[in-house]
Amino acid sequence: MNLVLGAGVFLLAGCFLRAQAPPAQDWRKVTALPALDTSGLSVAQKAELMKILREEGCTCNCGMRVAECRVKDPGCGDSRALASVAVQQLKAGKSSAQIRAALRDSELARARRANLFGEPVKLSLDGAPSRGPANARITIVEFSDFQCPYCRTAAKNVYTLLGMFPKDARLVYKQFPLDEHSQAAIAAEGALAAHAQGKFWEMHDKMFAAPREISRAKLSVWARELGLDLAKFNGELDSGKYKPQVRKDVREGVSAGVQGTPTFFINGRQYRGAMDPAQLKPILEEELKKTLQAQAR
Image (cartoon, rainbow, N blue to C red):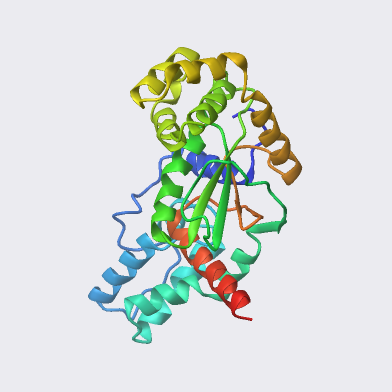
């Protein structure tokens, strides 16, 4: 992307670029990791160690698993420290569940999470497309662009994340079309026109499934497929009815610190990490716990 990238985009793009350099080994198959002393562990313990490290996320905000980060970025201090913690936990006879909990709640993990969020900002949510319970304790606001490839990846991941918290999290979508994407603005307007007829998420999914096909004509095709009132849909698009709302979302995003897409806010605070469900699950669990404690006071 040519725009100054937002936090979420930068992390995803950084991992993508790093992944282009062919690694010496496949992190999914290695049986030993750089600079990790596993002496004293049995064969079964070493196998369990690798399973844990292939599944648990690194805290350096690279969006990779610990084992992946050790192989692709052996200089990373976070993945090295986490791997060492897992070894010590295994030697102490801890179970897999206890080891995973120790990694997610380590001092390093807590310190990293504390730096993942910006200061709270007030965002207008009235009338914006949303999914999840209206009374959810966790509100995730996404500023996104339908032609942004990183947004496409994030859209799948945020659906997974919502599935982990079906009663406690909701997603609110805000339009942030980038000038460099020729069809992003009309896509944003088309999504809002579909929203007016109760089909925002269906249109959202169609556009992210085929971003290169987005055009004014294709929007009408999709609207017909979704069973929308086509005359109303086309009339609203042709009149530019939703241009002011798109501009309003963009202005609000810029004021809140959005510099690129996708950018997420969790309960009003900008999230600076990767949209990785495994990495975000403990963060949202912690956020939920704080919310419940505040309500109990």
